[in-house]
Length: 209
Image 1 (spheres, rainbow, N blue to C red):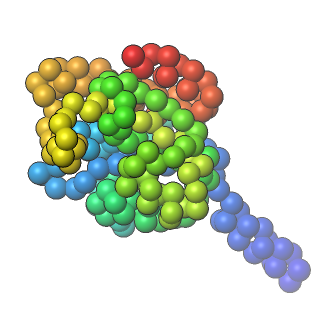
Image 2 (cartoon, rainbow, N blue to C red):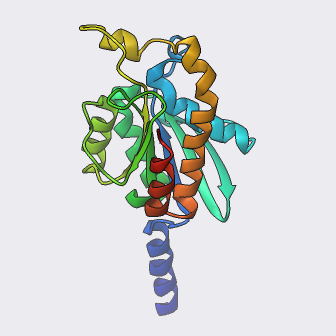
C-alpha cells in the first residue's frame, strides 16, 4: 500500500515537472487570408518555414495552430495563436501548461518596427516595445522573462500611417530579400534549442545587419 502511494506521488510529480528538452516556439500574427504576407505576420512566416523544413503540418488545435518536430534530441512545438495578435498570451499560457514547458524554453518571433528591415535581435527578456502581442504575453505569463526574436520590418511610413504600414504587404524589393532573412531567423530558433540563448544571441545578433 505504501509503495503504491509512493509510486502515485512520484508519477504525479513527474507529470507536473516541465520537460527541459521541450521548446515552445511562438510565431505571432493574425489568422485570415487578408493578413497573409503582411509585415505583422512575419512570426507566422518563420514558424511556417520551420514546419516546411522538417516536413510537418500545422493542425488546428486549442487557441492555436500547432506542429511539432524533433531536432538533435529536442522537441520543438510550433504554435500560431488563433486568438488574434492582441490576445496571444492566452494561447502561450495554455500550451506552456499543456506541454509542460518552462518559461526559459519559450521563444517568441515577432515583428518590430523599431528595427531596420532585415535586422534580427534575440533577447532573453525585455519590454514589449509597444507591441500588443508581447504585452499580452507578459500579462498572461506573469512577466517579460522569456526569449524573443525581434524581426525588423522598418518604419518607412508617414505620420498616421503606422497601422497601414504594419498590416501592409511587403514591397517587391523586400520580398526578394525575405527568404534569406526568414531562414536566418529559423536557424536562430533551432540554435536557441540546441546551443542555448547566450551562444545564439552572439551568432544571430552579430549577423543582423
